[in-house]
Length: 64
Image 1 (cartoon, rainbow, N blue to C red):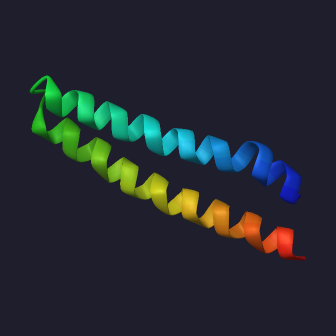
Image 2: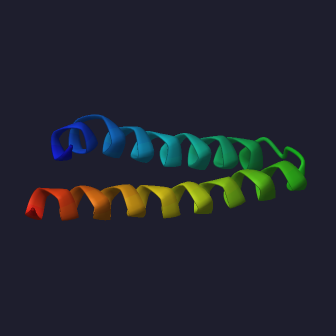
């Protein structure tokens, strides 16, 4: 289980956070709608929470 998490789940979670961040920044830089930037940044925060949970779960499984 730890191998799967460290090989696939952690990079996928980090990539999702990076994509949400970059989309939000790109929207702000080209003066896109403020509501879209707000939504993307909220998604980023939620995805960061998921990424932290995935990383902590991976660490927990590696310690077992």
